[in-house]
Image (cartoon, rainbow, N blue to C red; front, top):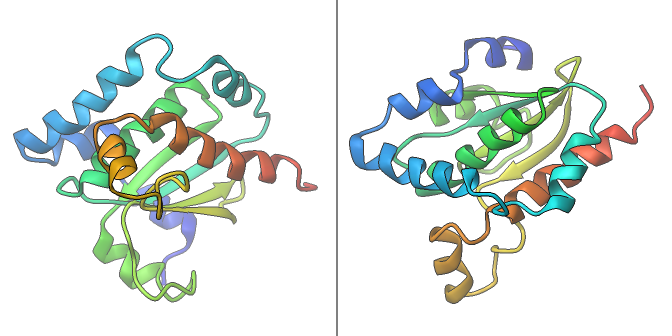
Length: 171
């Protein structure tokens, strides 16, 4: 079984992940990228929280370009990494996650995107699975709005909660 660091090292960056998709898949992800480039798409409080991070983190992501949740949330993760240089990401396939992460993380199944938040030593400090908490179980109207890119900050908030909890752990 590969270590978290080995998995991270063989993963793709966001640009390569994006290029691996079909044109319609790339277009869907690029719509989210463009929304995130619009001033105010992520509020100043969330941006300030991102800037306050002081430690290094690695986001090991299991994802596939055909997955609409990956198209949305990986664009958000890339935004986080571009905004806060102490955070980077690498994307591995769902199949590799099933082989190398499912049992280790005690998961019944690998839902994507699966984000394993790793500290500087490549030790897991948190998980983000598929969708932000604000969307899970919130009904069809919220799900429609999420798919339309209206819950991008909810993904940022969920990741920030994991990162901030790790910031407060002793070294």
